[in-house]
Image 1 (cartoon, each protein chain N blue to C red):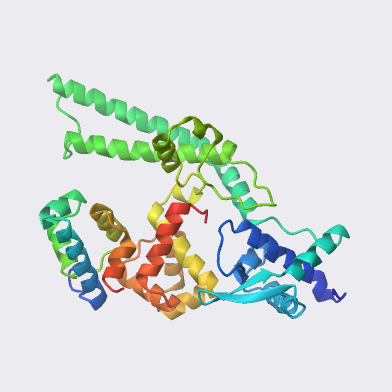
Image 2: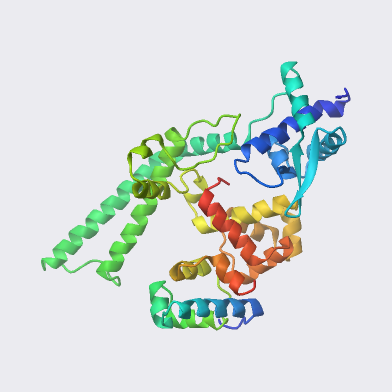
Length: 312
Length: 76
């Protein structure tokens, strides 16, 4: 039962219930036991983790448990919240009566919108980058043909012919992948439907005309196509940063708290989480100890993220 | 400067060495395969370098093994 205090106006209980319901729906993978951690609920309410509203949300979650609309469970040492049958009935009643408040934009819709906007801003630059790399490859080819014909000496001082081609291949591949990803984000990634999880399974309808081997190759090529974080940074480090941030949020620890527990500066941790710092092993151990997990558990998470390409 | 020799770094170096020899690679051949300097890679295996995660994954890729598996084998 909703009361009419000013606090309820800020975060109505039924809104929190709807946020848990949507967070469960948008998770996209089956977990046992079901439920979403508190930071997942914050994401669906667009609430900052350490804010006054976050404290109100926590209070609402407890109230919803007391009234039987939610249950809280433990998964991997973290408290998660799941909507009960009674909670679903309450949501249906509120929906039918037109009393269900509108939730803020969902994290998956935000990821889609932001990726699309960013792609729109940067795609022209990416096209120019591909053009520049192609021109560079053309110049290199001309120089090597001229050298082979004995007309001029090769201009690639200090590099063997093979190394200069490997370098061109690496840069061209990166430029083309980035342009492919931006093209996908700008015009091929369909707007997510709020009713279901928007998980990139990397398939496209036209894949069905190919045999299994060709399909697998096409799926592999599409890996990371939604992840704008990969446009400028090393993929491995982006996923490492994402895994650390997820584990920290699952344990409901702030960036400053984790940095303090690990004995490192906050901005250093922020750089690791952003994927812009390649941590050495000792730094990794400091972080995993502060998170109370073993190093291989963290790396397992990184590898799982690489497989599923969940956008950060 | 090779001087760290923490127990974890040493255990990781041993796990890398063990995975490499299981696959029959000579140290020099493997270092060249993953684009690392032979003496640097030797120091990594002896646990004298506190390697970065990027280097760890480069080595793991060269061994066709997961970085998490190397860490687990090292008991880390």
